[in-house]
Image (cartoon, rainbow, N blue to C red; front, side, top):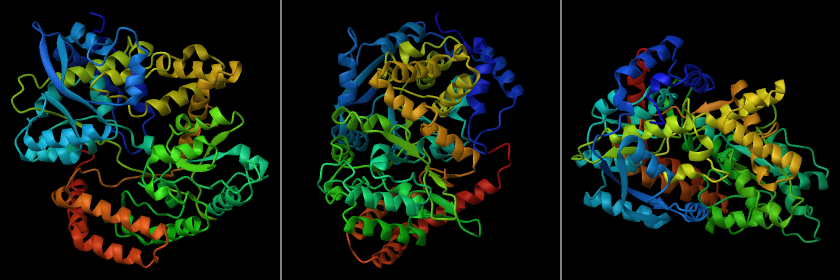
Length: 562
C-alpha cells in the first residue's frame, strides 16, 4: 500500500501546517497534542483501511471550460476515469460515480431542483442554505461520530485550523450534519493591483493613501497612460456584482473603514452588520464621483467578471482590487502588450490611518451524506487520502495536485487543503532565498520556486503570475505585512445560517446590491439611509438579534471549548 496510516506522518509536517496560521485563529495545538494524535492514529486505522469488497459512492459534479481544457491535455484520463478515481479505488476500495455532470449556471439550477425534490447522491457538496434545507427535510445523516472516528490527525489539524467556526456552521440541533471543506480566511485578503508601466509613463508615485489612489485613477483616465493619443482608458475596474474577489469594490471601501460584507463589533462589543454602517455611505459617494467622472467603465453594471476582464486584457484599465490569484487573470494583458507590468500594493487608507483588511469567513462548502447511505465514513476516508497524498510524509504533489502547471487536484470530487498552504509556501521560499539553500524546498514550495526561477532566468512567461503572487514583492509578501501589522479584520460571526437568514438573507443581499449600484450610478446618496431602514425592517434587525444570541453563547464557552 503506497499511502500508509498516519503513524508514519512526520510530526514536523503537521507542526509546520499549524505554525503559520494567523494568531488568534488557531485551535492552539501543543506538541503533546500532535504526539497524542499519532498515538490515536494507531487506534484509528480505519482512517485509511481498504474495504474488503468495493464500495460505490455517487456524487454530482460541476464541470467547466477550465476543467475540460485541462482534461484534454491529460492523455488517457477523463472526469470518470483518472489518476484520482484510480487512486481512491486502489488504496481504499472506493469506486466513484456521478449521477450527473453539468456546467456553470446549469449545474446550480439542476442541483437546486434535485435538492428541492429530495433526489440527492450519496455525498453532495452544498452551501449553508442548502445544508439547512436538507437537514430540515431529514434527507441527510448525522456525521458527528464519523468525524471523530474516521478523521485522520492530519485532517483534523487542517479542518480545525481556524477554530470551531466551520463546524459550528455545520452543526444543527447539536449534530454535525456535514463535513466542512475549510479554507483560510486570509486567502480572501484584498490587494491593490496597478499597471506600474502606466505609473512610470505618467511619472506618478506609488500610492500610500486613498488620496493617492484617487489621484492615480483620475490620471489613468485623463492623461493617456497608454500613449495612443485617445481618451479611452479607465482608472479602476469594477463588476456588476461589486463583491467579486477580483475587480470588486470591497478593497476600496476598506480604505474608508467600510466593511460591507462582514459582521463587526461596535463600541459596546455587540455585533453589527458592516453593510449598513455610515462609513459605507462615504465610500459609495466616492465611487459615484469616480463613475460620473468617467473613471469607471460606463457599462460595468451590466458586466460579469469575465466581460470586464476583457477591458484589462485589451489594455483599457490600469487598476483593480483583487485577491492573491489576480495575476493569473490580468496576465492576459501581457499577451497583447508584452510591456504591460503590474504589481500588488497594500490596501490604502485615508491620510493618517492604517487600513484594516476585511476577511470574510471563507468556508462556504460542506459535504453532506444521504440519509440511507450505508457508508457515511467514505467522505472522511476520501478527504484523509487527498490530504495525505498531497501534504503527508510521502506526498506526491506534482503528480496529484499540480502536474506541470495543470491543476489535477480538480479531478477529485473532494479537494480539502491546508488553508494557509499558499502563505506557508511563500514563507518557505522567502526563507530559502534568504539562506541561499533552495534544497530544503519540497512539494508545493519547490514547484512554485521552479516556475519563478524559469520566469526570472529564462523568460518563461508562464512563471510571471507565480512571481507576482509568491515572489519577493508579490501578494503574499504584503499578506505577511498585513498579519505582522495587525491589519487583518476577521468576520466576527462564524455561526452559520440563522433561522431568519434562511428566508431573508437572499432578499437582503439583493436589496443591498441594488441600492449600492443605484447610488454609484448617480442616485442621491440619501437613498443609502432608506436602504438601511428597509434592511432593518425586512429582517435585518431580527438577524442581528440572532447573531448576537450566538455571540452570547460564544462568550460563555471556555477557551478549551473554543
